[in-house]
Amino acid sequence: MPSLSPTSPSVLPSAARQGRAAVLCGLAGWVPPRVVTNEELSRRLDTSDAWIRTRTGIGQRHFVEPGQATSDVAVEAGRLALRSAGTDAVDAVVVATTTPDRPCPATAPVVAARLGLDGAAAFDISAVCTGFVYGLASAAGLIAAGVAGRVLLIGADTYSSIVDPDDRTNAIIFGDGAGAVVLRAGGPEEPGAVGHFDLGSDGANEEMIMVAAGGSRQRTSPGEASREERHFSMRGKEVFRHAVTRMTASARNTLALADHKAEDVDHFVPHQANLRILRSVAENLGLPMDHCVSNVESVGNTGAASIPLALADAAARGAIRPGDNVLLTAFGGGLTWGSCFLTWPALAQPGLPHDQGEELAS
Image 1: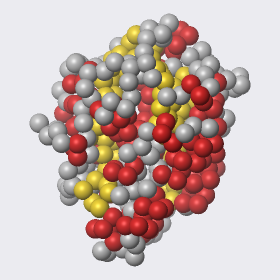
Image 2: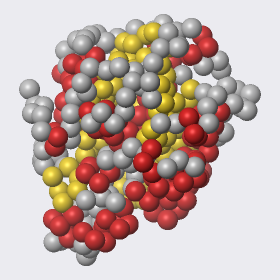
Image 3: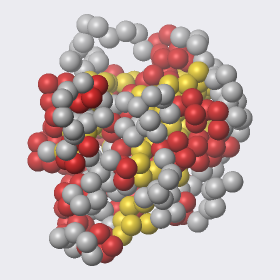
Image 4: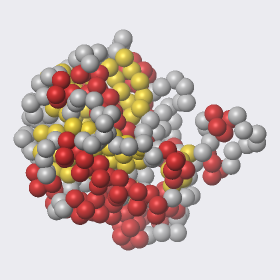
């Protein structure tokens, strides 16, 4: 499937050109209190802190406690994002996740109900680590079409529930968490307006990132699923190559749509896959690493939550300021990829991740 790029004949007029845009007005991130360090993993896996840091840039990650689910972390981030936006009502709730509470029903209606958003439209998006960018485009579409005036978008994943804890390759990479934004209807020229997107997919390579069991393909096949099939699998070397190539091309397409060049980018916020991928994409785009926003060292790869968590962390530290140009890009299973460009708005203090000292559970 081709990307929605400036040269694609199927591209529809963007929200920005239709006079009604989705504007970012609230932001928050939340990670579970439980910290899992590299040293802890090294005590049961054949690895070390130095080995993990050298290959991934990750020093620790957060895991939910037994019995906690994706909806629990999504609710925490969603509550804080609503507080940041100064509102207690939205017209739609979108949850981007690879780890829904159940195969059926979707997780978003449960999250909406727990947040007191009774009657709001609610649905999930499954695009793995690209889920938040796909969610931004979906939320922008709802607002541009006049279906919703405000949308709460949450990227939430609990990878500890699907990664085999004895899988030395993947257990060191992934963590749990949620990040959320509130989008409101506004003008296309306002700071915070989102409207320049590049999205794409390649289903021919679905097996590159996969949980094989649990869906209709496995359940309608004879025999029991193996332990390997029930857990997350990823072909790391191939994923690295595809991620760098796709994220680089998608980011360039988005800059072209926004009529900007790489030198106009103040902050580059890629999906926090691992530090090597982040560096490679930034280098390909000609962006210095001090323009690259990253918190992968402290939270690991949190899937659909990674971009909003990184944004919340940077905004809370004052690293991103109103008027700055921000470029987002992501790559995930499917295969999927996507990018978005926006000018940063003035926001109320973002909700802070748990490990930054604020007690978030209320």
